[in-house]
Image (cartoon, rainbow, N blue to C red; front, side):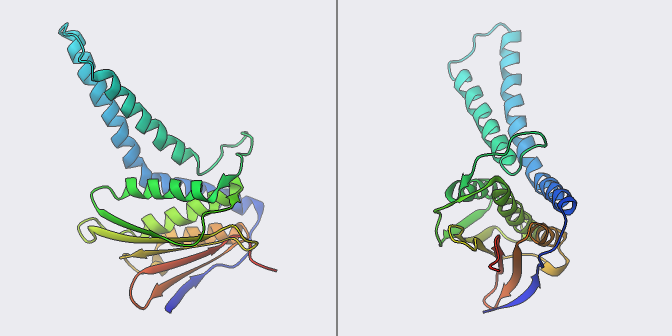
Length: 226
């Protein structure tokens, strides 16, 4: 058992929801931006090398083409995973996403955000079922906001343990995750407060607890029973 620190309440208007979801996207992108810049720099480095070889009239090695293709594929994959978190205004609603697809996207972004560390991931629950685009977005934003918001500096936490336990195939869709170690007091972390607000405004419930054995535990319920 742990000590519950915070819990959301189910209130909010459509304007609140849209504004909070947009704030959540910006918050998460702020953490992902260094990854985008890193991948962009890799592409530019390869292109600069190609340009230098062309300038001196030297033929291009056979490996240059595959190198460029590989970097572009990485860039495209990263951008697709970021875009997956929400549809732009005016676009048709995205088709339902499987729970497995949602979890895999989240884990890939977490792995990118913890490069240079040892990330130990354990999984439980069930990855069966599907989520509509809004549900997938709420799960993704609330998870990434809390994860990156309490992630300690690399020097303080070279190893990070993450446990994911989705149960999103039932009537009361839930997902739990545990992060160890974590930094600061969760009650004062703006990213966690934002995640709570997002879940609250979209009609769900979320609790944040500190476990006795250490670690921060989060429980998200998308569709609370009446």
